Image 1 (cartoon, rainbow, N blue to C red):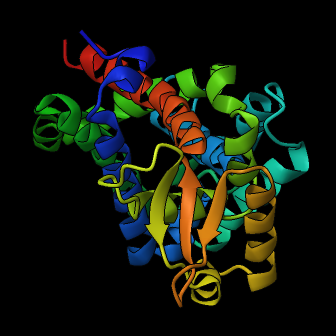
Image 2 (image 1 turned 180 degrees about the vertical axis):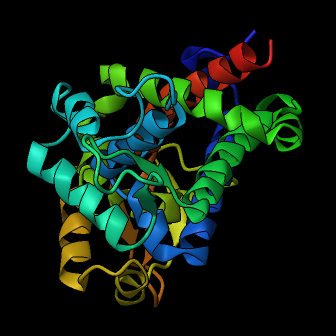
Amino acid sequence: MPFSAEDLVANPKFILAIRFHAGRMRSMFDAGPRLARLLASQQRWLLTQTAYALAMERNSADPTSGFTAVRLTGEITSRKAASRNTVLSFIEELLTYRFIAYEPGAERRRPRHFEPAETSHHAMFGWLVSNLGALDLVDGGNRVAHVEAHKELIRILQPRIARNCLEDPRWREPTDHVALFLWNDAGGLIVDHLVSRMDLQGDDPKRVVVGHVDSRALAADFMISRTHLQRLFAKAAQQGCIGWDTTDKKPVLWMSRSFVEQYCKWQAIKFAYVDEAFHWGTR
């Protein structure tokens, strides 16, 4: 039986799974920064996952199926996740960086159908494996081994995950403190970086230590301005999400346990859909 979001939140190993997945996402960024930025904010996550799902649902016998500008725009704007212009700009970006291409012969047809490039397939498979690996950490399962032995499963698993997440307002619209980061440019990358460095051995009932964070280096790493990062950190600090211990020579950043708990509850929604899709697809 798949985990529910409530099951995951209640499991003491889930925080380890969250940290593991955050670390994998950070590594994915290091391996391909421009591609990883497609998941860097909640809006881009929804756009990317929905676009890929549409492509996986392509049926050559049904000309209305697949990834087209009209279909992606309809899926996204109907949930008010982005404007039409944002969707079209996103598609242009994917084409510019060759993360997608026109289907063979589709350049002159209407509607134009797009298909993911090989690098995009590889990245999405890595994302799926990371999520499954996190779930395996919780219960000692073998989801990753199964999917790696049956890579074609991504064609049915990813669309189910993406659609469930897109349709669930709890995932689509994170709580305020989580949204502060996730609806911000590169906010998802920043949270992944912080969560991947959590010291889970600490016993402070109100704080989770992250460690020293060099804002200049981090901003350069994520290709954002230092001012933008500092403003985001300042807003998060004002709301009690993060703070700094300045007793040492180098300030040590911490996250409030309340923020970490909110983030885990939000992530649990997606992980539950990942597990549900896996059990459904391998039944």
